[in-house]
Image 1: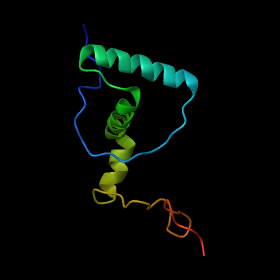
Image 2: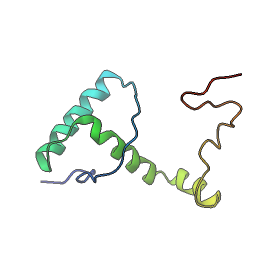
Image 3: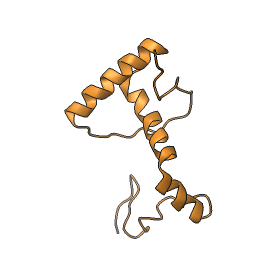
Image 4: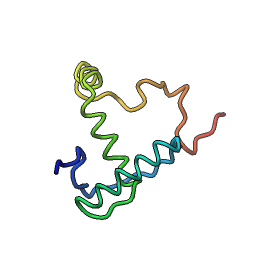
Length: 93
């Protein structure tokens, strides 16, 4: 039987982020989580999403190219200048 693209999950620190998904995508993620749990260890669907996003970003050639051209690391918020982006908890004066 073939393995899944997403391997067993590493243990890392986390930041909470709330997202909204279309129902068909949520159902497919649940199915993927069930298969991942069957092959490795029990895992909730939400625990897989950050690892899937990381795998996607790491496989994006365009992103890697832009990141390399910027000196190896794009600055957080570089695409959204401080004047137009607000962090959670900030208010405008």
